[in-house]
Image 1 (cartoon, helix red, strand yellow):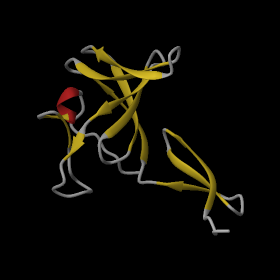
Image 2: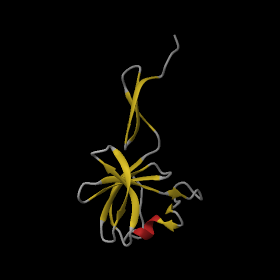
Image 3: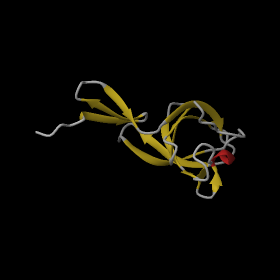
Length: 124
């Protein structure tokens, strides 16, 4: 019988949780959690979670809407929630110039150019 490090695992928006054979829970992955509220200054297409179908669907958020950006995998996913309780994610890319200071982009535009703030910080 082979020795396995983990016996079961699950994933949520915080990351991938693995239960070790000694029943201790561990978090795998590089997620950064924050809770910053930003107001859109232009239309943004993002993925909204549909509670009824349990899938993400493309949605358009309008100028003036506030999004709480609360988590990122520091690669291409930025999770958000809206004032009315919608949850979803922005599919972005991060430039690899420097991992700690690189910027997120949506296609060719900087993520920060979609919001009213000068900077979207993921420092803990």
